[in-house]
Every structure is written in C-alpha cells, then in structure tokens.
Length: 274
Image (cartoon, rainbow, N blue to C red):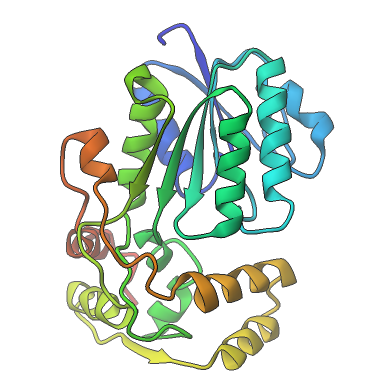
C-alpha cells in the first residue's frame, strides 16, 4: 500500500477531510476527487470519472447528494465499472442504515466484481456541530420532526478510522460494517447533553413534517435536499436503526465514541459558544 494512491471521491465532506489527514499521516499517497479538484470529478458528468480515477489503486466513495436519490444505484454501478476499467482494485462505499435505495447501491457495487467495503453509518454526531443543525443550536433551540425514536449517533472520526482501516488492511475486504455509536439517544436527549457540555440551555422542539418542510423551503434549501430530509425523518427514523451495532469495535478493536465524549470535546472547541 505504501506505493499505491488512494482517491477520495467526495473527499471534501465531513468524512473525506478526516480520512485524508489520517492517510497522509501514514505517508500514503492520497488525493481528493471533486468538482473543484485538480482532476475534477462530477457525479453528473461521467466524462470526468476516468481522469479522476486513473492512477489510483483504491477509492473511498461518498455519494452526493445521498444514496437515497433515485439515480444513485445506477451511478454507483457505472462508477464501479469505470473503476475496474481504470485498474482500481477496491472501493470503500459510505452508505446509510435502513435505506432501501442505499441497499440497491450496495448490491450494484458488490455485483461489479471489484473488491469492496460497505460502511453503513448512522446519523453523524457532527450534524450538530458542522452541519444543518448548527445554526439553530447556536440560537438555543432545535426544531425537527423527530419524536422519541432513539438514534445511535456515530462520530465522524470513528467513520474515518474505520475507512482508513478498510483502505489499508486487505483482511477487511469484501465485508460490510454497521457503524453506530455505543448507545442510542433521542434528539431531545442529545440536545440535553450538548447543552450540559456547552454550559447553556438548548431546547428541542418537535414540529410537524409540514412545518419542517415549509421552513426549509422558506430558507431557500434546494428541492432535492428537502426531499432527502423528508425521507430521512419520515421513513428512516422510525426505529429500524435504533439498535447499536458492533462495526466500530469489530474493525478497530476499541469501543465507538460515546455521544457524551463527542459533546464535551466539541464544546471545548468553542463551536457552540455564543
């Protein structure tokens, strides 16, 4: 692996930057493939794919906007075919738990004949600190259409550690891992832990799906992102993914990061300070 290059498709997101840092610290050759990279990669322009993949031996793939969109499985199938033609040996695919469309993408990857790993991740802890929820948290109140269904939030740093292990250790190849935190919390419980760590009250308010979608539209979010969030809150967050799984300890030999540790560490960074 020391003389092989790893390409990160969608490597500018929450997981990609973390993976790149870890691979570079190991002295491995790694590059990002995105619309703004030196070798551009655009999911909607397949003519860019061969140039972005050429010269790599393996790839980490984070599909945009999400594997739940209708055309994702066909795109993953085509990407895997292109990867084989470019002599890649291995793809690590970031997937979601309990999403039927994501499962179709997983099947397409497995059927391609390329070596693979599938990382099925639960909701990221970092959605509260780096994503769509941050602005509301800073304002002291988060409004979502989620009730008392618990979710075993996963730390993106754990995902990055798992991805690096999958990319660099062939013994993990051709396996799927369910990546969750060690315990499940409701959104209300997660906000209580964030508030305690940040030292200020942060309240959670459950709203109707109609009000939630209306607020997103009024804020100017693109329609495809609104549709994605509606599916995640309306279908996937129904209890099917509430169980904690052993993927992180199975591949890393250590427990997954607890949400309370994430909250304390993130509060110390000052990101939730106002």
